[in-house]
Image 1 (cartoon, helix red, strand yellow):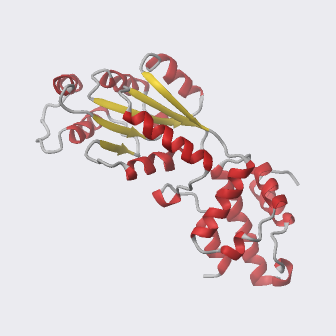
Image 2 (image 1 turned 180 degrees about the vertical axis):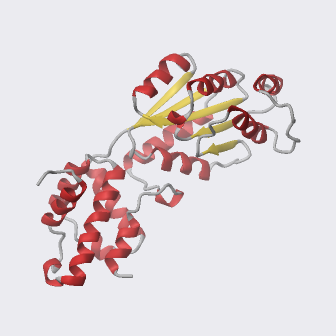
Image 3 (image 1 turned 60 degrees about the vertical axis):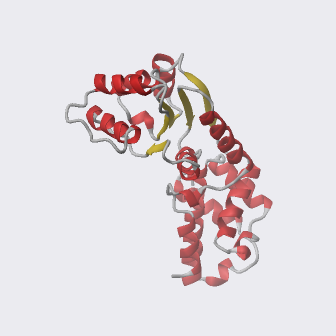
Length: 268
């Protein structure tokens, strides 16, 4: 595999703990969420536009949980109420046999019976995909105070609906993730490259490159990944066909512009 194809693989957008990059803002969000989980809250809302790092953050929180017996993650929404309740039951009472007739109402009774004895935190990723009826039941489960929910969802009209109709009096903490600054954009690219020992490539990026990348992506990490992947795809092509075109010690802005054109950030 060529060097530039290897560089493309670094910027494939995926949700893994090792994709968490410790930037000033991401560390701030991480610490704030950790502190919120330690508080006696019923629910915590984590939201932001797609590509702001919600899923990576929530996976990092789960991975770093000191006592994983009390912190659980549902990364892919469970659409069926019955299956969702069963999953919560296995989190809450992992050593107990799952009742055959476990209903929502019976589960509420179980939670109420345990509220002074056991408490767990459940991290719900992509919560905007849950139905309104199931979100209402999640709200009522949180009222038992046996299960605390961290609800991660996109910042959309539906998020506003969820916040207003379901959780207005129950969310005691809201954390909004936002796109990165120019400084964040620079550090994100630098750290991604340096983590894989591409020091020489990291040094090829100049201030003008970073400003252009931030302009095209608005500091959205998913968009940065797409732009960088496309940039190294173009470099890989030239390395195979016209290596003299990419000779030099800096990234050329025209190739960033070509990448942006290919991705539709700018028009021809």
